[in-house]
Image (cartoon, rainbow, N blue to C red):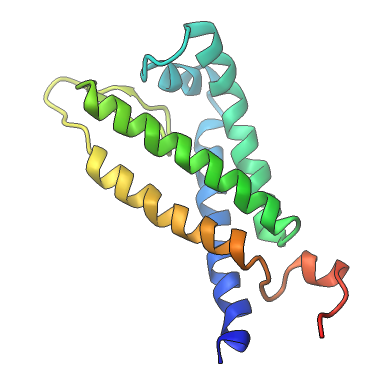
Length: 157
């Protein structure tokens, strides 16, 4: 049963994670300076480094999302997803532990919260852990229905 359901579960995980990356990158790509400010709000690295990472991140997210959408290099895309999500969770946990009052910038510009707004770090970490589970599943079982990987790989007996 699992052998037949596995590729369908892989399809759901792959398309779900692709949607997350495409939406996350798409919301930031129009304002790379804001993306850099969101990275800088974590106060982990020098401003110039945060600006470069913030400018690159939306493009990385979009590329990973497109690869997952097509089902091309699924295991590699899943590995990048695991890496990114682990860094994001660590960054959010660090901001929470240090008492920073910031928006994670995961799906938009991020940065300092307005007066009276409270961070939602617990929810953000839980959400990213869910995405991490999807990525981990694809890392272990990258096979999925309707994927380019299936078209370029010989059938396994």
